[in-house]
Length: 101
Image (cartoon, rainbow, N blue to C red; front, side, top):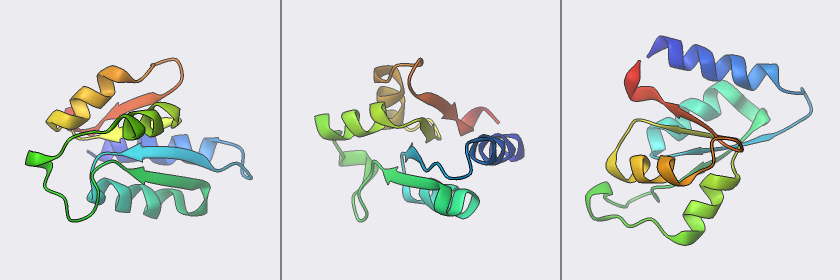
């Protein structure tokens, strides 16, 4: 897990200082961590809306577009995150699976 956070920290600090990057995450705890690391250098989109249960949640086409247009998609390999990770282009969006660390 520490390696993934270090990767995220390196990725965010390696970008242009004035640039803000779009980062998509699956769930709120991931959003919190990315915001704490990235500060004002990241614009974080959380796929699972606050108050929704991941077990009866359906991804909308708009959510897929937001994730696909993000520079990074960070997830912990939940079922809906796995589906989203398969839909995004690896040439445009860096997919980071934190569950493998």
